[in-house]
Length: 149
Image (cartoon, rainbow, N blue to C red; front, side):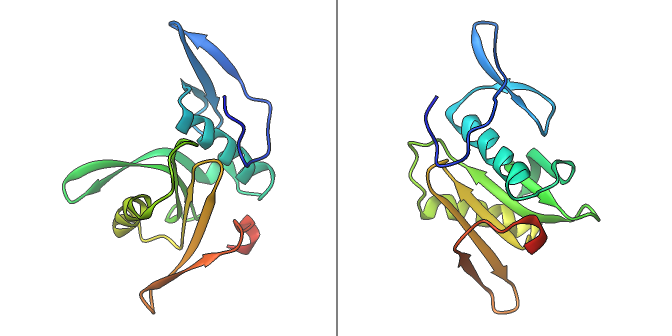
């Protein structure tokens, strides 16, 4: 798979029915190894191992209802009271992060109303903190450690 702008880790990859699968530490099962999944697994590992995010408060492929349509958030970080705190959207490394990607994650946030939004294609990572009082957001220079949230 492609080299990313994220720390490497010891991936668990296997072949199932002639297709490659990768172990998802959050869902605790093997899932199809797509370029986007490659990014997700590396980013989740980065958040857990380097930023101190508790895996027990993270979920992948979170289903939500947006204007009567079923959508899936790639990863959601929850508070200890299980309210949503952060949405993370992944794209394959060859997919450019554009306004369309931010619109997609912003639409998810209409439902979840989180404090942080992150978008990553494994090469470029963008994190913004929402300011609901001023109805705006601020891009952060780095992905915050869990203790800084």
